[in-house]
Image 1 (cartoon, rainbow, N blue to C red):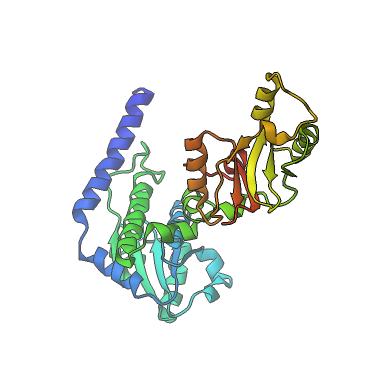
Image 2 (cartoon, rainbow, N blue to C red; image 1 turned 90 degrees about the vertical axis):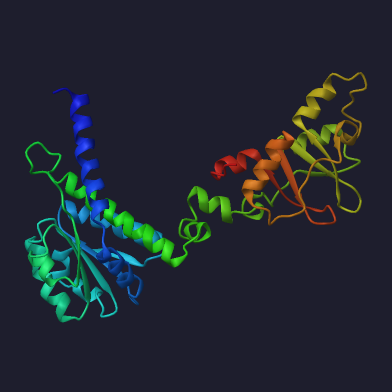
Length: 321
């Protein structure tokens, strides 16, 4: 059997297990959702070995989708971390065989504390199954591993059941895009929904000159500003024009080019600007792209400059349209 055949067979075995599990979903799944929803404390995930690795992923998924959760290793629980568990918590314990020694040792203590227990295991008659208030069965025809030893199909099914629980809880809680973004402020969705122009714009040492400033002096300010542009203001400190390095290059080709003349003579009049610093950064990027500009001055309603946003500022901040 070649590599491609092995890959296809592995996926088919695991897909068969997922389909079979979907067909067996029953009232216990709904009871599990209700139990987690009614939990006033946290959902604690416990497991050993590969089940523990899957459990850690499940805890992270629950926590980021509105269900307070953390992973607890059974061995650590026996050596003090059981104190992290309270009566208002619920434990979701994972063991395919239901007989993992480390996990089995903490089950009596979980029940002693009066904590609700959900078991994910292949057998209701196992140690884990017998201690559990609700059992979510992990039943597979066979592992994808040719030796039937390495957890493969069983861990795939366990993770998928965890995802199913998380998604069901999201629906029941009315968990929205904005809620997800608030838990992921550093992610692309969080940036799209929360990062504003004011969070990104440059506010200090802006390259600003007056309308009577000579082109020679304007070039010096442009070099110091390091954004390839100078902003030109009138006597009322309102933005009136903008001189970019592109404007400067075009000026070099004019017959009346004179470094002693006011930079205003070669500048772009009434440049595009933004008078709403609370505009989302993604919308700022859309504006910059639509207008085909590099730099966007940010002003107040009286056109007084409060900052600038260069397209590179948006890119460096990971903002995408």
